[in-house]
Amino acid sequence: MKFQTLALYATLLVASPLSLGADTPATKTTAKDVSRKAEDAAHAVGKYTIQQRDDALKAAKSALDDADARLQALDRKLEHEWGQMDQAARKKARAAQDGLRKERTEVAEWYGKLERSSAESWDEVKSGFVKSYDKLAASFTRARGSP
Image 1 (cartoon, one colour):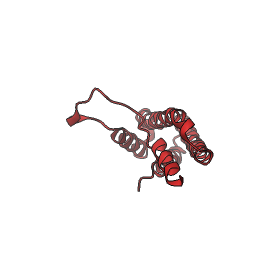
Image 2 (image 1 turned 120 degrees about the vertical axis):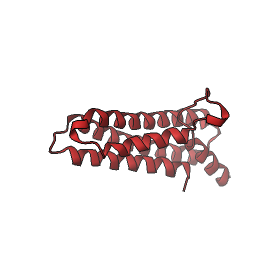
Image 3 (image 1 turned 135 degrees about the vertical axis):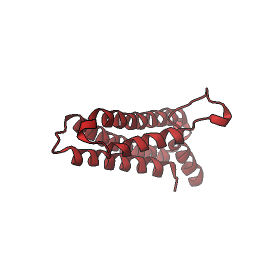
Image 4 (image 1 turned 90 degrees about the horizontal axis):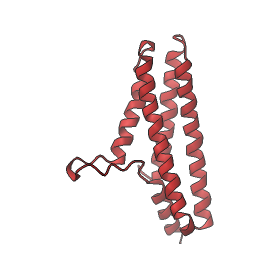
């Protein structure tokens, strides 16, 4: 029973954030591709200068939107599978979900700091954003059970 619980839990956390059904099989964009692009956008924030703040904010917003989509997909999947889960799996899934939400909030706080940062604090703030996003992305990866 423990294996089934863990397998169900892993399935819940693998939920893809976006469905791009219009793509043909040869050019199909996967959720992993979308998430990789968001991660690349988050890392790009670290390369922008204060004069490129608008571009940095667009890249940061894209990364934050991806995290939101992943969390929404997890919510839907968890709701759908809730009745099939035992108490331990429910507790573990909720704890993982709460942890991801906390980390997402931290990323959003750094995004707000990006919007308001001065030239003097720009490097520190953009570095904080990238680090907090990396932490969130790593948590999503661990939640999926990926290496």
